[in-house]
Image 1 (cartoon, rainbow, N blue to C red):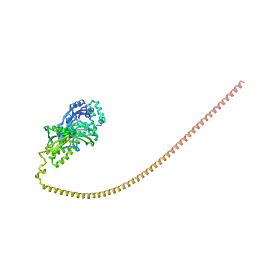
Image 2 (tube, helix red, strand yellow):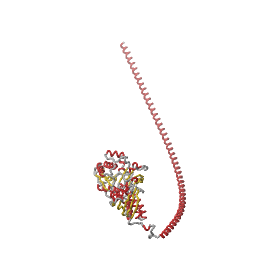
Image 3 (spheres, helix red, strand yellow):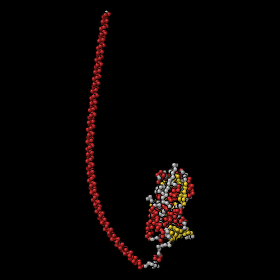
Image 4 (cartoon, rainbow, N blue to C red):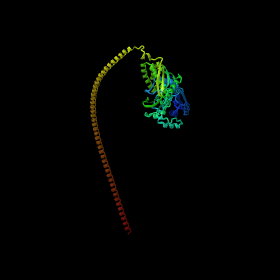
Length: 553
């Protein structure tokens, strides 16, 4: 398949473009579908059939009703088994010694289908419902960018406008009610479930407390080992170059060769006998510890058989390297790096080592346990004659004396060398300690000198600062004194000015008074003159009158 596809986004004036949503039919992705429509996107819902118990036709009707312009359902079961599960079996993949990577194997398979649809419909965007705390967001987005670098990923649970609007489940329920989105979740199952043909995982809800036991009714697939059949069952798994080739079930008379049928048969037998249950705490890629409960029946059987066959066919030193690579490969798959260069390299190395792993292993399953009964291979490194205690064969017992002697001498030399090395190490250590002590003394001396220098610098600095402060203070005092003198001078000038003004006003007032007085005198004089004149006139009139009287007389 192509690792890099050219994804072109076709826009219209009325929308933001087409987005392909990884749709599960559950509450989250149903709400996300409607929310994407609200944001102006045309939504294509993509559903991957990975063997989960899902009514795909009902989910298709639901997505169409919610506004999806197209709903694509792709059967990826065979692709999941052949392209993802078989490499995991060949690699003996297991994360942190317990988790068989059921979800981590399914995600890159879904991504491949998602990008295929995005390419076909010309979508520029893909979207998923993974949260911002889990591993799936990394697996989806790394995979999408690796297969189609031009694609844009819309991750609502990392979009503030989305997660602030829906801070919890109640808000999602309310949004679903407002938009007529069916609510399949009930209080009877207070945990999250993810299922495919590899496993069923349970997490969150009451399982978030690692001290809370998983209730017995939680397990949907495997039989409780205590209630499993009392009769053990045997099956034979045949591998060809590390890959499951066929399965035969004893008592049923069936032999299957098809990869999907092989895996389904292992799942059926394992689940019936309670195989593959595990309750664990794992370290997520984002650095959070999480508790998960898993049911992985078929893969548990295949891994047990494959590892046993490897011990028969594979060289000891190759097996050591292969085990190391298996750990690396499991970490890469868990961290979403299926389409990375490092994973391709690791996988190619493991495939090379698996070329010799061909043969059959018979297993017996009983009440949750898997027992290896026998194994055989056409090309085996096991030499029965060489290992037998009853047949000498080509092995000469006398050679063992030389072998033991050589190894004993090697051990003695090794011990001697170790003692010499130890002595040398102690001497070196003593020399190092001496050197270290000297360095510490020099360092201490240097530090003391530096402290002394620093102290002197600080004193000089302090002295300089004091002088500057003194100078500054003096300048401020002079400035203050000058200001006071200026204020005094100004005040004196103002007083003189005021005094001068008062004198002027006084003089002016006196002049006005004198003027007024003079006017009054003039007025009085004028009045006196007028009075004199009047008097004189009166006298004159009297004289005149007298004269007139005299004349009359």
